[in-house]
Amino acid sequence: MHFGAHQDLELLGLLVAAGGLLVLAPALRVPLPILLVVGGVAMGFIPGLPHVVLPPEVVLVAVLPPLLYSGAFFTSLRDLRANKRPISLLAFGLVGTTMATVGVVAHEWVHLSWAVAFTLGAIVSPTDALAATEITRRLGAPRRIVSIIEGESLVNDGTALVLYKAAIGAAVGGTFSLFDTSGRVVLNVVGGIAIGLAVGWVVRQIRRRLDNPPIEVAIAVLSGYLAYLPADAAGVSGVLAAVTIGVYMGWYTPELTTERTRLSGDAFWEIFVFLVNALVFVLVGLQLRLIVDALSGISTGKIAAYAALVCAAVILTRIVWVPVFTYLPRFLFRAVREHDPYPPWQFPALISWTGIRGAVSLIAALALPTSFPDRDLIVFLTFAVIVATLVLQGLTLPALIHVLNISDDGGAEREESKARIKAAEAALARLEELIADGAVRPETAERLRGQFTFRASRFRARFDDEDDGAIEEQSQAYQRVMRELLAAEQAALLALRNDRIVDDNVVQRVQRDLDLEAARLDVDR
Image 1 (cartoon, helix red, strand yellow):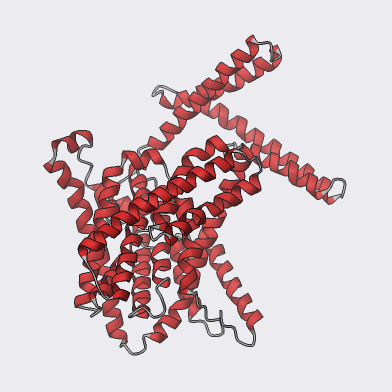
Image 2 (cartoon, rainbow, N blue to C red):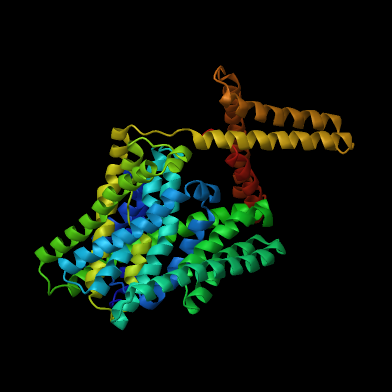
């Protein structure tokens, strides 16, 4: 950052403005990425705020690995397998088609060289699930649609950035060979996945021997870098290495960690990913002013036309691709339609409108070397695509879901109920074993048996069409009482602190236990 004489006040103004956006987001009910990117643009044109310059050589390495790792870590491996065909068509076929379409448009009408045009196409081809899944989940879209959107976003990052690396090589080196590039892509993919698995195995062995939440969470944060950096140094895909170790550790972490580590890790990742995304969107918004100034040699009308053409190419390619490749494989292959029948037309219609671009495209554009041909124009066009898809598609998604009359199919809730029933039954079975061994007092056994039996009955009632809701109402009433009692405990605890009867560290430990109990309750305050 390059600050002026009043750098402290300028920085304060920047932080206050960014904090104001975060505070406004819930009140305005606007998806946070949309608000941050638009707010960042507005802040960039406020006189007096500092000019922000992000070093290209550190953007990709510093920001991307932990984002990729966390996205992969919390992705359902089962959903990826179940939806591998539609996800593959989107993450490989659509990415390649978008890159080619944008490349042709950028070459013919924006007058970029082929290599530079395809670099732009690779940059804007991956989607960002953050805004789309936030909206679809909040409005209750079917679970399969949300899973496909998330899976596509996870896998297409790797595909797009492998193509991006090849396109940069062609632009800088000045030569391009389809055979050579295809071989490099295959090597990148295989090598990246292999290194991700190898590093994941090592990290797994280390974490198996640890029982220290701060250290384990710190290793989790470093894991993306531990896979990305050696893969990048070896000349293969660091992106796929980071994604692979994320999926690998997401599968094995529940077996390696205690509840304390899992609670700490989940809380950390939620805040960390939120802050990194917020930082990237706001900082890039702030840079737009510098980018626009660098393009002063091109008329405003031309820049607007270029942006409109590239945005149209990105959006229309997806709108055409999704329905065609949703129904064509089923039409051509009987085995496909028998295994996965034709979906309602509303499903591909919704998915075709969820191609929102975000942080990965921003990071890839900013990571271009400062000497890269037409770099400022590429960054501006990338920013235009992100803003257009975020604002146009992001803000209209709720209306589209309403018009298409798409609603939650209840699949996630049913699976959660099944899981809770099985867990309660396992607890009851273990309780009977402990009773037989004489390890549990009769009064304790009776209390625990009643607790877990009630829990299993409550979730079984959700599968009973004739259930009158009595058991659920009983549970809700109990939880409301528990919340009142926990609130009374908390008030008493704070009173002890305020009267200086107990130490702050004691208060924090007791408060954490009360919070964990409250977190188990379904009812709101």
